[in-house]
Amino acid sequence: MLHIYCPHCDEHREEEEFRSKGEAHIARPPEPESASDEDWGNYLFFRKNPRGLHHEQWFHAVGCRKFFNVTRDTVSYEILETYKPGQQPVVTAESRNGSASDKGAAK
Image 1 (cartoon, helix red, strand yellow):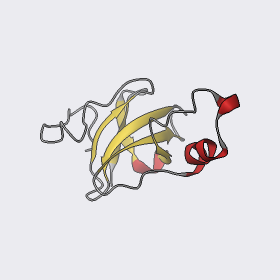
Image 2 (spheres, rainbow, N blue to C red; image 1 turned 30 degrees about the vertical axis):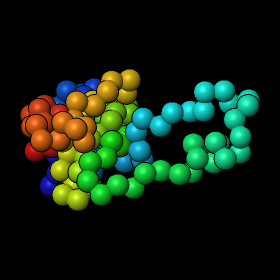
Image 3 (cartoon, rainbow, N blue to C red; image 1 turned 45 degrees about the vertical axis):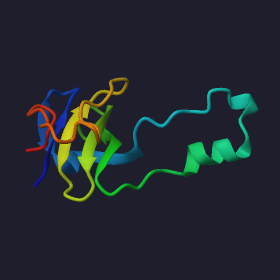
């Protein structure tokens, strides 16, 4: 069983308590009134589906009921870090050769 670290609860919890909610760090069109239909379509419907490192938004449905972000490898399903919304990921494609912190990594 996969254990995921919730940065709000400050503890590792079982995978069944969480729900994946899609890609993280999606920017809303800066001027919604003047955004084209194509801009809105891209914002609402089109998401990355990478092989490898991916930043996702998750929801702690059975625990604190708060959202947080996860950096996950889509090939191995390994969770490299978790962090609160508004924070930036430490693990990126450029820093991937480094190690993830124990606190945010899955056990």
